Image: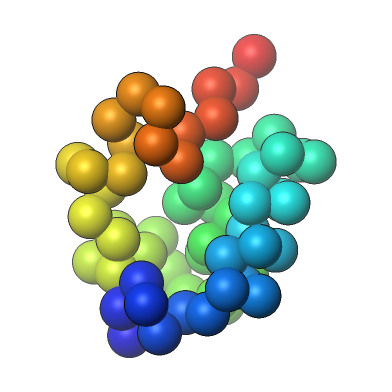
Length: 60
């Protein structure tokens, strides 16, 4: 599985969880995909995605 095969509907649900529940992208993907955190790190290149301003929502 890779980022492109996840699908736009899943990505939309993940972003909604991140915004609504103030969850990290990892937490939201783990819950949505029903997988473990290490698999999520393998799917996504977190070095690229967690740069400031790219799919990162700060928890406050």
